Length: 203
Image (cartoon, rainbow, N blue to C red; front, side):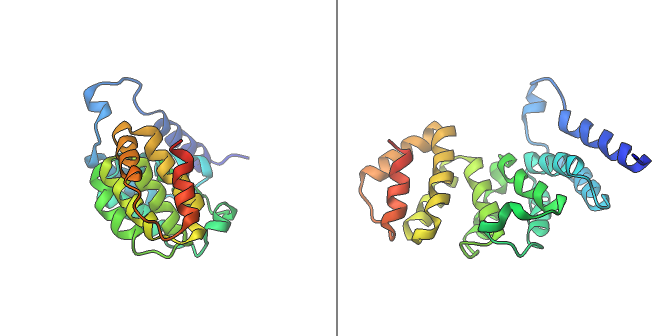
């Protein structure tokens, strides 16, 4: 039986996930001033259902303010999982934050994500989360970060290399051109498997 809190949480998440329906200049811009409200809501949610957790985490990610990204990072850092067990978590907060990494587009969050990504071991959940976020920002600076990392990366990260660089190449024409030009220069990769993964999506 649904409780009052269940109904309230569902109504909140539905309103957040719908957002505005227009495409005005205001609605297309990032609005960090709105992030604090959502961050406060996230902290107050007591054992949220997956629908509510997904809606709030997604909007925090879309806004992409530094405080919001840090909040999501703090949440994901609580998990000791590795990439291979990424989606075996039953905590709706952790699952929501993992999914929300694909919604980060604000380039202002890139310096923080770069710092976190380059400090992680290659199988940690934070490594996967921050790498996915960088890929989805999808500008030249993000692409350079991933490519420079890929050149020094071991065989085991080839699937992520293909996924992340494939994302930026597919979504941002300038990044696609940059990758093609860079690869034509035949610069070295530490791992032949990684180089093969990069070439696979550039055909």
